[in-house]
Length: 420
Image 1: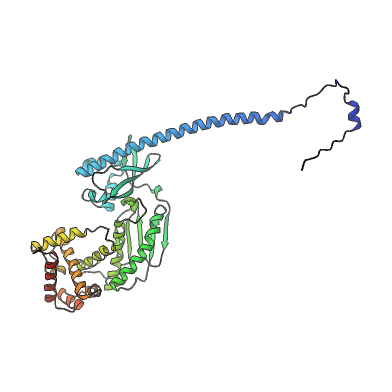
Image 2: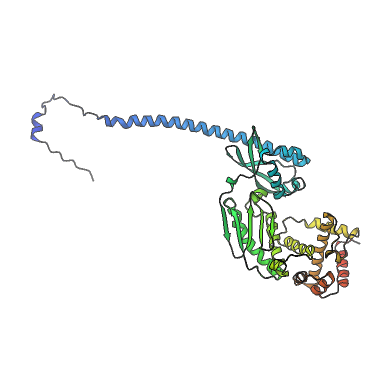
């Protein structure tokens, strides 16, 4: 609808108004207020252009600085990799932050063990490390390093400090992690940081399912409290408390996590080991009432490690390498007698222990073949009663020790001995 305007002229106004065809046309006066917005607009536009120019320059310089820092840090990464590959500890240490050198060395030992013994396990050989994402905060850099492990793309966080114009490896920055959080599930209490939320989302249901399977495999009762799993970032060490069932491990952001979001095999192996210990201890009754276990830790470890390898076949264990060790032991007459798997032990080196552990696991494989799924739970009960080796075998498998040993040796020969 059109708007109608109604005008009313006062008679007085008519008298004073000029008339006639040449009456002057007086243009309407423009109030100064009408010009005000135009000048303001021009001024604002001018200031905005300056701000955009300055902001663009700042952005350009910041990106240039970020690009330069990325190039410098990737050069440091290459030097670190070369030092590890050559075993050059002096060069590697020279790339670390001098202010926290001792703490950093201890940190690496807690997180990764001996860097030079485990370097081959951390990344695939002959690859170029690169920085997938970089954040700069004053003199600190958070570098998300991309690498591959067994052909799978991984990421890992590494932290650096700018010192005397050079980037040096330093301790994790507390600002990276965010707040500490707790998550309670049916059997667990997870203690972690805001940054690790996504990993916990995947880990929590997997841990519940894995624990239920372990309890079934070992025929063990569930722990009546919460099993505590904690991700550590500063005092980042592996810790196992079998009295309170509290387990701590380094954050996956420090050890490496899969770029596709799936749970890493090493992480699952670590958690499965802890849970298998819980199941085995619950079955044996060991550590109840804070009693210390002084009996057969070797057989207990064999039971736990074997369960982990079955639960996480893509984890830390190399099944073919273990089979080859057994073949070599059979070929060279290095199969230990069964009594060697019970105390008192005569294992004088890491190699002796590793060989004994692999052979003890083969004993469990044989026992399960001849006695069924109840074999391992029965042996755990025997370990809990701290029986000597021959009584433990009779109790668990209802067969005399000498007869069981003869059957096991024949089984080893058939499976791992030379082919006729």
